[in-house]
Amino acid sequence: MTLSFHLFREVSPAAIASGYSSMGANERKPTAVHIDRKNGWVIQVWTGISATPGCVGTPWEGTARICVQHSKAKSLNEFNSRKHDVPITWDELQAIKDWLFPGRIALEVYPPKDKIVNAANMRWLWVLPAGACLPFNLQAASVNRLES
Image 1 (spheres, rainbow, N blue to C red):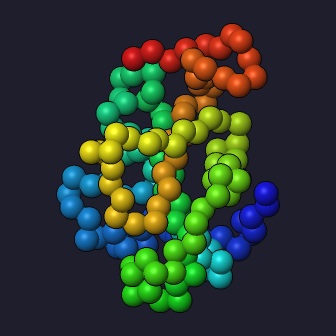
Image 2 (cartoon, rainbow, N blue to C red):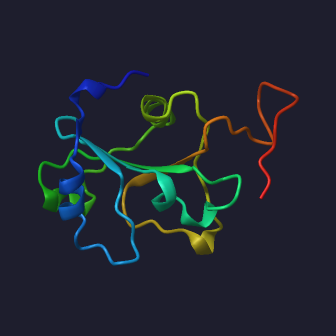
């Protein structure tokens, strides 16, 4: 799967700050935003403590978050209506993860039904710290474990 990442424009930190000014004081702004308006992609990236504050002081510290949205909307009103959402495939998520964090493992979480938040057409990936391994793997019988 190849995505045209040369079409992406990284949004400046000042624009991120002003564009997310309506967020509450406890909400954390992304550290990077990549937008491809031509193809309808918005990718938000959180790194550092703002990504996963609950991981500070654990082996999971350094985990990054990626939020991916894809839409055929031509205006902000259309985008917010969700009528123009485009499904995001596993191959696309893998390509985005490899573009932003090559060589790292990422997870997508499916919570219990009572914890689901489905307010927008977003897919979330949590990218583990560099060098992290999972206690399970499809290719290897022996892996290092993260323990908290």
